[in-house]
Image (cartoon, rainbow, N blue to C red; front, side, top):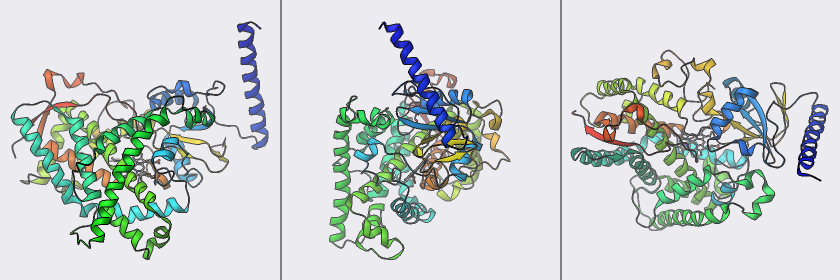
Length: 504
Ligand code: HEM
């Protein structure tokens, strides 16, 4: 058979297959059709169309197919949600059915199976471990009790930036913020910021990069065993190092506890180990069911939740402030007015910084830290807005697209304009589906309070202590604004700046 005839036959078979699937679907689901979407290729579906920045591609596609779009990624039926009304249907109306997570290879192999909160199956384990973390580690009171520690770490960074300012040095802002967030997080976990026995940043960088890669095995599972991309081989080394670090952290705490050392304040790992050794009270059931690997998994939730997210958010906020001098000036004035003669921002100041809050919202609208949230999975066949969604569909909420919906944000969607939030009740807590940088519903981010405290504290302090210029006489309009995608979506290029000390 000639190649042309073969191609025609293949096309015919694909069309026939889709027609039969369509007729069966209609017949078996009470006339409800699947949502509209592109016809995929055999085996890979629409995977080849996603590109390096899937949030942008899916946003474009949704303009053609609508706010609830279906496509096949490899063998996985996938629903992409691109309007606030549609997001509300999946994250509120049908939240209980769509609150599962799909199984992904990276999580199974390197994040302790499904023991992390972020990748745990929807069910009693996830519920109890999430409740424990929300109450015991991430509650506003707990976050507040560690405020001194965040301020101290931030103070070290301010001092080193002042030294750089005195000698007119160009500073890699992105790298400095990455270091700060890592130090703050390790300190919350360990009670101390530096440990020469490991380099957590390198491991995090590696895993964050890998998480952004497209892994064939997650979409065409039977190809997983072949490890065609060398994904398993590459991540094995990093996974091992990560486990070694977590073992050191837990060992240290166990040894201290066995010596009966009285600590002035308990860090996160102390709280976790106390739960395991004293299984009574509210979390009794969880305490009886967890072992060392669960504790490592929870520590990992906190590390991944705290470091890359805040770092990405701060990097984008500073980028926008540097590009918009008018806004920067207003933020600086507001901070001075609230702080008076204090040199260091206190967390009690943060709730009074209304304009800064609008700046954070506007930056998270344009540059959501996790543009596609974490994928959800449907646990039952459901009908949403008249469309049939089969069980085990992957649900992708395009937060990046929601922030650019002209019906909500007017035609100036690409403009950084914090004043658009004046008099608006749109908040960050996930009740308004126009803006959901922390997700919403049952799977919404449990670390929002800590995340926002970190982001606001760091930005407020850095714009109060310094003015910021771009190096090499670069104009703010020339600043590269490309993003990249890993676990979060940071700037593609590091932000380089020259700090200038502001007089208090
Ligand atoms: C600026 C900071 C942060 C941002 C923008 C952020 C954003 C998000 C987003 C978008 C999700 C997915 C929601 C969904 O799938 O519907 C999420 C989930 C999660 N976040 Fe955060 N996060 C931040 C800080 C934190 C912090 C500080 C922690 C913990 C210390 C944390 C822990 C988690 C966990 C454990 C989940 C999974 C929840 C679940 O599956 O039940 N996050 N976060």
